[in-house]
Image 1 (cartoon, rainbow, N blue to C red):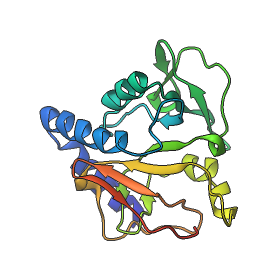
Image 2 (cartoon, rainbow, N blue to C red; image 1 turned 45 degrees about the vertical axis):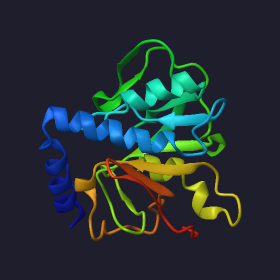
Image 3 (cartoon, rainbow, N blue to C red; image 1 turned 90 degrees about the vertical axis):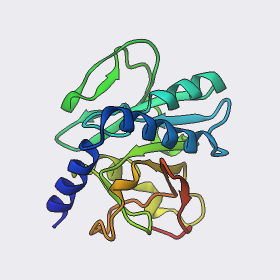
Image 4 (cartoon, rainbow, N blue to C red; image 1 turned 120 degrees about the vertical axis):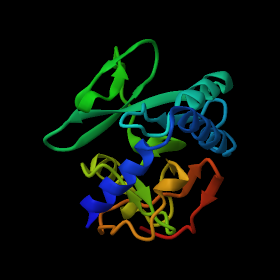
Amino acid sequence: MKANLRKKLRTARRALRAADHALRSNLAASAVTGMPAFRSGARVAIYLPFDREVNTAALLVAARRRGVRIYVPVVSDVRHRRLRFYPLSGKTRRGVFGISVPHRNGTPASARWFDLIVVPLVGVDAAGRRLGMGGGFYDRALAFRRERRHWRGPRLVGLGFDCQRADSVHADPWDVRLDALATESGLQTFPSSMQ
């Protein structure tokens, strides 16, 4: 069921013409820049896109202009599905799965200490449940959010296109929910509830 939905939504994302993809990416990025957590001095994790995900180039430019400290997710252990966050500076290179990563890694930061984490998605439902590529890397890195009663760590905003919305993403108990979704239509926040 999830595999079929993933295939359908990835196909919809890939079907966007280049100019339309660029415009929608910029609009979605603009929605993120209006968030209070996207401010000077904040620690923000932003993915580097692949597989026709929303392009984060405009978001990275805006972050640099505002003095946001930018980190990017890097797959550090495929077997155990581990994701670490490294500062983005200078050139990038191809990493695991062909995803761009910093050429020089620097010192990683724990996911729990970010102000905002911008996550890619394949699909999302009306309750903020995210469908990813199926590896579980983000769910493992953010599992601490399910164990907290009061402080839940960074705000999680999914970055996607409206064509990636679904009635249900068939979430599993370990899936970490989003706090908000940024698309070309703007920012949608989800009700705050424990995972």
